[in-house]
Length: 227
Image 1 (cartoon, rainbow, N blue to C red):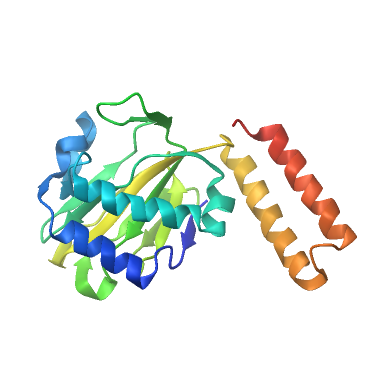
Image 2: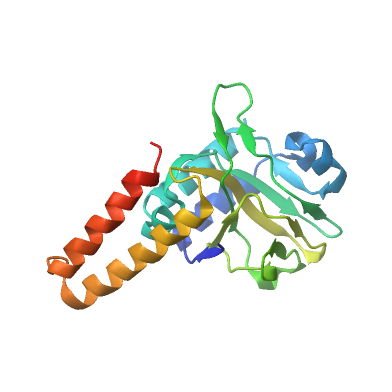
């Protein structure tokens, strides 16, 4: 499933991220590419070991932890430290699939990439092209969100970034290992959680039906989750 998370970062957080990464040194985006991606990718990114990437990534991680929508949709067990890229004129990323396992260089940190995330850090009016195109069972989904908004999608999806023809597309990208490995089970839990919150909004958290539905949610999560 594709889930847009509006305003993941506040205006102040966005400004802090941009001030940090815009002043940093950028390198060839293929520094973190696998063999196939290296043939397809044309962009720049921050070194994942850089101080700027760590400081900006910390802001993103704090925003993720504070987002009920992200937590409900991803049920995160591990989050790869956020990376940052930018696409100038002529840059793009041809169709590819993300690696199933991501390993942080120089450490024993690794995760299974169940979900991919792109946090847009430049407004759509600032650049032409640069759409994230995700292929799914219902065809292509083209995504180009306002700065501060994030898209969450299955890491198993074929996807690409269309060439930028004007301006600069800036984003953070990373992967999530979910407590619930199966995508279908995550969808059921997300839909159930959304329904519970809706009913609770009408009847209150103490309503007997809300309590019972909450119990069903947690029993399913208990059955499916690895933590």
